Every structure is written in structure tokens, then in C-alpha cells.
Image (cartoon, rainbow, N blue to C red):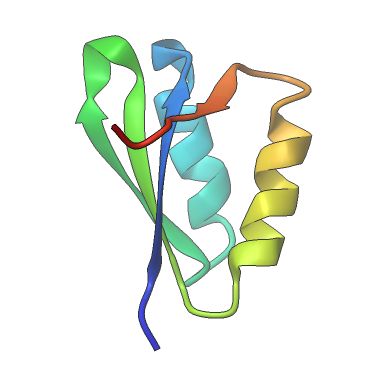
Length: 72
């Protein structure tokens, strides 16, 4: 099984917060910053954990800006 990759745009001031939240779920997902000034990040999600990450992101969207980036 392979990891799933999601690209998101978040408020750049909240990148470390999002990373901290995801890291608190050991082995669930990792966050890489693609463009810090633009708030572009990539999540690499462990196989079978997509639903859980989706729920976490949905809940966090109530607090901070998180938008899915559309591939071009």
C-alpha cells in the first residue's frame, strides 16, 4: 500500500499548529511545507488513514483556514 498525498493551502501562521496536531497522532500523517509564504503544504497520509485525516482537517477548518489545492 502507498501513502496518499494531499496538497493544502493554510494560513501560513498556522502551518506549525497543523503540523503539531498531525504529529500528535503518531504515524497518521506527515506534513511538508511546499511554499511557506503562500501557506502551501503537502500531507502524506498513511495507508488506511485517509478518513481519520479528513475528519481532523474538517474539524480544524472551523478554527483556521484550510483549503484543498486543485491540481493543475
